[in-house]
Image (cartoon, rainbow, N blue to C red; front, side, top):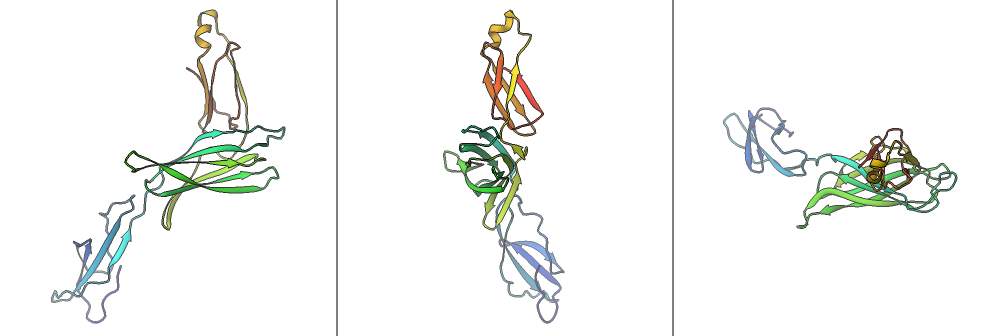
Length: 243
């Protein structure tokens, strides 16, 4: 948009983007629907006014427009590894690590917030920068990875929010599967394994996965045919797979 010149009203305005004429309009508003979106690109606009005799005015003040970057496509908790152990109240009694992957627009700053509940019941927040994985030529991939230590006494993960940032603009998204308690165990016993397939089953890989909580683990089957999965996020939709 722009202001009409003082004095005799012009009949038309000419709008230029990066030196290229986009056409004539009669009002003081122009919508440019041709520019690329979902990318951070700078465009420069000029406006000329024409009177009824088609005399052109001096150019209006240059206007610079920067299109917004795209939203992060995905926010994934790629791995949750608990390096500590728990007491009887399900409190972490050593520092543990949670790793986060954010996938979004390349070549930006990125961080994530981790909101959790400590052993006193208070809600705490950790803000952690994460860094982009680069190609061999230094070009950004749009994949950002980072990790944060959970302090002793953490009882519950409340929320993880990842974001990409460009200047004053930012896009953010929450990870799925939260809130969740920090500890759950699962025991799987294989039954009906006869002598013909027993040797094949022993040493095979047994995995469990919860789509709702993005949590899972893998173990090797031993001769007891009983597999223990520890440190899982509690969920009721774990799927078991033998490979």
